[in-house]
Amino acid sequence: MEKSEPRRRSSAARNWPFLAGFVAAERRLGERAQAGGRLTAFAYEFLRFGVKQGWACLFAGLICALLIGTYLFYPPDAALTRYDFLTLAALAIQVALLALGMETWEEAKVIALYHLVGTAMELFKTAAGSWIYPEASVLRIAGVPLFTGFMYASVGSYIARVWRLFDFRFTRHPPLVTTLPLAGAIYLNFFSHHFMPDLRLVLFAATALLFGRTVVHFKVWHVHRSMPLLVGFGLVSLFIWLAENIGTGARVWIYPSQAAGWSPVSAAKLGSWFLLMIVSYVLVTLVNRPEPMPEAAPAPGSDPRAVGEPIS
Image 1 (tube, rainbow, N blue to C red):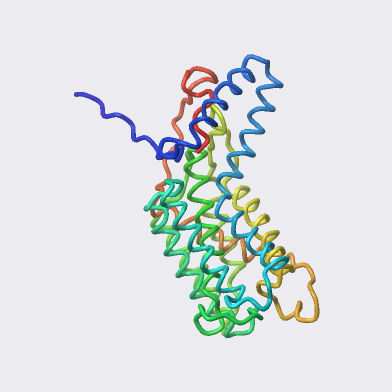
Image 2: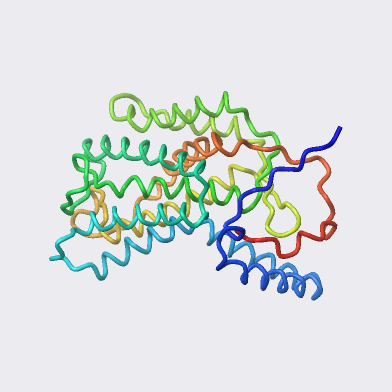
């Protein structure tokens, strides 16, 4: 019986001519690094990791740049308010990513769902006084400008893109039948803790129970490296917290404690972002189903196609 060809993951490099020269140059650089010895190969792989992470952060990075840029340079007397400009710019970025093949329609569907999930939480949280958006806008629902959903969607975009770029594989990943209820309980707790006891400690424990033994294997160059998935969640949560400090520093939204002037976002918010990361991750698994890591991985350098494979 003839074996079917393995499914190829989509790559912007195959659809976007601008990247073709970069991919060819990267292949040559990888070949030289591999020939230069162990230390040179390590340095190249480290550089490659950073480039891939930057590429995965494309949507989120552009959103952060917009927040900072409009805070510094957007004219306060413009006919189009700053918030409305942010909404239209974020929408244009999303359309461009799809048109250029840098994001798949399957990923866009999950990101759109996350946009709705994030907007619903924003409506509740702003009504409860957890934070406010101090500037005027036309494109808003109640007290929530429409661009806020794109900020949540940028997290989903990052997870979907980094999954594809690093060819994630997993060991001992919990099934969807257990992760979906956990994500639902976390999301519900963001609302219910205003009226009843906060269950986040229980949710942290449940997360540790489900994902504590899960290992994510990620391919930077020609072999899969690995780390505990919970560590990955924690690292991403830290960077989201840093981005939140950028957002509040740019006065895009503010917490009650920042009404009189900016101050760093409380480190306690790291826990909130960690839990929201679980929701984001589980939503992405609806499209990118976790694939197990084969027991015996190929030895380094055994696959001639491994050197300089497209970053995108």
